[in-house]
Image 1: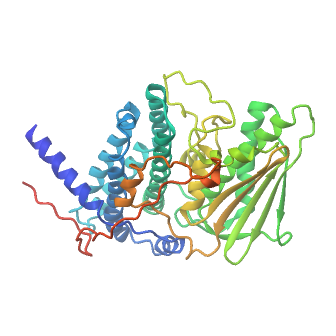
Image 2: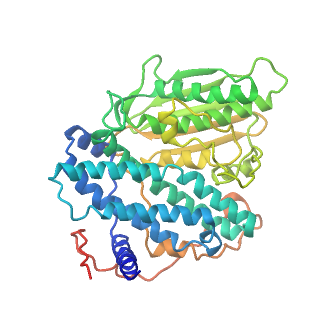
Image 3: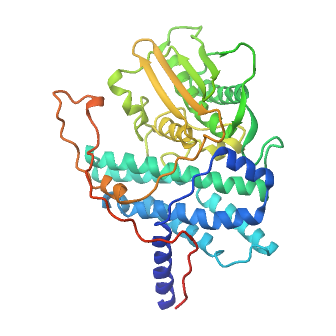
Length: 433
């Protein structure tokens, strides 16, 4: 018991120390260049440090969550997974990367972490539902939860990118021969569009017995547009917006046999590659536009949750999308598709934007960086500003109407404080007592 207590104290100290270091965002170009050189020893050294830091940042942020959420069974389970994964990575801190056996064990540990965290999205979502059913959620609490979930899931995306890239390069994870890890140096955008459309149509036809067709237009005629990117990320985002568009068209044109086609326009400029999806599904009211990117908000009815299993047991995570030859999940209802898709778009400095005309249809724009050197990771960093966001009171409106554009989180005028004194060397040494 005494040894266990000492280990927990030591682990907490190491975690807090790592949370004071800033994570290192990588660009698509850096991922690609490293994958081409393919040095397992350097990957081991970088990941041993970087994964610990990224885990420590989000684990520190957990501590600022409302107690109503922290006490939920599912949230406790997620925290235990992160704690265990941090310990797994830290166990290799003093191991010799020149030892081939150590590298094999590290790859196995990475695979275990990936498996352990496979259902983090669903389990965390279940925790939010449990809190909603137990305590209810007011506006103030909802703002804090939305803020955390964006950062939590973006952190997860970044960690899984690092881990799956290592596993694809050095482990047993299956990979496309054309790709460097999960990155395709000549990513075929039209192929991504087609794959995502077929997957979404399969679900739409299963639930509605029909689905609209698709028209694809490229801005420069018949030229196939290629660039450096992660095909799985593009397909994941497109699948979600196709799914929403198909459902909207089918439900809006219930008396029509021939449904209006969906339209995709792809344009590649000097800075952005833009994919625009247009539908004639009736659109959404302007006042609901911002709600589309809130977790747990959906224009569809939420499927009944019995409490017997995860409410998102059929949610299609990107990993299962990639390895199951398409999704087999629910058509709609939980409100996680668009928020998570926007995070995947923003992860490498892109974005996902929705414009809608109520009574006609919706346009969705997916913006991606053309230049791989500009497509750098967007990572959440825990600091004093972060902690204050969880303490912020809901803003009292100083406008006559509470419109979307007149509401914002409180801004702060804070004294400049010196950051903790940390050396540039990020090596952490902890003496055993």
